[in-house]
Image 1: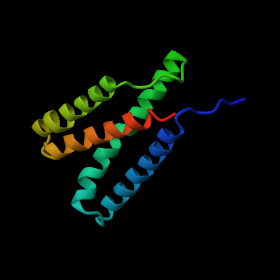
Image 2 (image 1 turned 90 degrees about the vertical axis):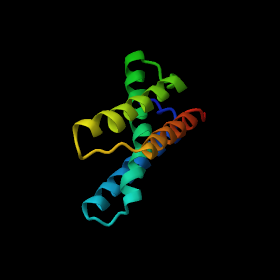
Image 3 (image 1 turned 180 degrees about the vertical axis):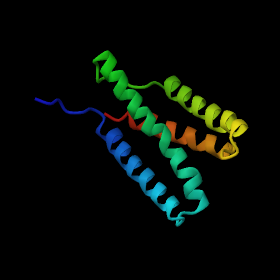
Image 4 (image 1 turned 120 degrees about the horizontal axis):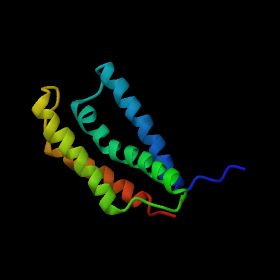
Length: 120
């Protein structure tokens, strides 16, 4: 018998985020999305998507689905993404640009994930 997956709202948000990401990428490839959408929507979505994956890895390793990512873990993920994509990559590749609004988007996504996993 398969046990029910906890955090249904987090997993629903994850599914909607992945679908939204794919729609944005499709719109980007057809050049029908605005710069705002292509520049910031995926940045808001990435931290919750990666956080759900990290949470599943944690559940697998610890064999305990009652575990949650704490604020420090999520903040660390936001910080790592910010440093890598907004500071390091712009220095080594002209395709990337450092943007303070991307940092805001990463933090917003992290905050959304933190709140969603607190629901029963």
